[in-house]
Image (tube, rainbow, N blue to C red; front, side, top):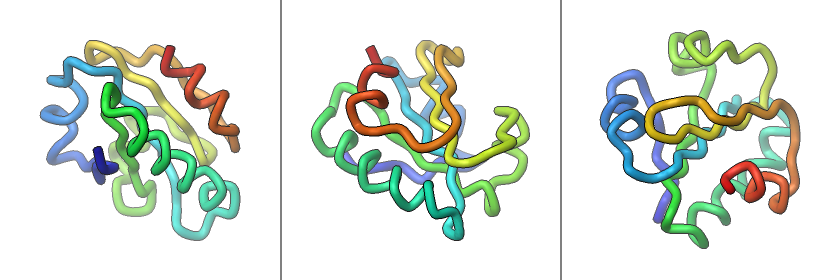
Length: 102
């Protein structure tokens, strides 16, 4: 499954109505650690169809970033049944991101 570009417009449909756990990567194109996390998130998306994987560009989706209280990037968020269950700030290796989804 490919990564979904999450926006204010598709948030309800993609996240709140999902019957799967949702991983959201909050990033910016100018952020060095975000560039390190991005390919890992892409891999997780391709290898794990049991999850919905999304990315949010904080420069384009400031309101969505504000709603999640994003102060630093990258920030990884796991949602389940429309509720935030985990939130981690900073670079994480693949095994730690997968652990967040358990």
